[in-house]
Image (cartoon, rainbow, N blue to C red; front, side, top):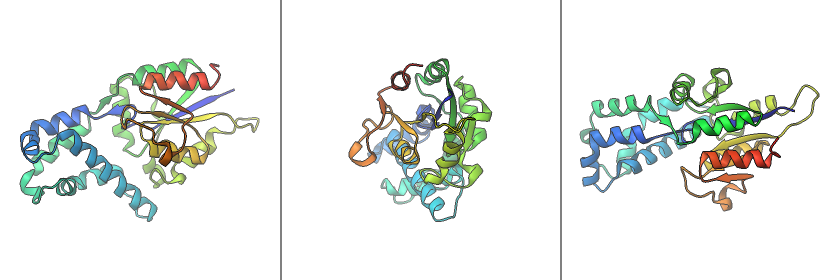
Length: 244
């Protein structure tokens, strides 16, 4: 019987060191003089962009995540305590960081994770809030085996994660085989909010703590599989599915 797993991509299979490095090269000393580390600013920028992206979506004003991300850089600096963000960082600084954003790299173990699941009989999918072209470029560069035809973007439906409507069409597509029988279908991410939402639609939940550090079940519920690394998570999924 078919087995499927859907991955969040950016933050899970793809990670941010090249973005942090570029920001450090452009603005590192200035940021540190304000007691702001580049890694924390990047994390805050993503958190702010994800929030506003989701809020716009649920208020029926969907915009692509990339548009939100670019336009919220200076607000993120302001939130971090920079009173005049556009004097602090030039448009050239922002453009350099956005260029690095186009070249994010695979998280350690991403290719092996997908390979293990594929060899165990899973069909591997991706569901991203980002641009399909940009994100497929990350996967290709990192040799992470999710073909373009199995990478879906929220841009296509105009509904952003974690709105349950963003997950449901793929869930419905994958959970019924040609005989009308429901199969175990997994969703995997390093964002607990993402896995939690997918689980409420019906997916089995797999969570990697490499990005956030802890699952916090008091907020996000219990996960079916938790791994500290992508490879550990993949092995846990295979075991939970009966190793078949």
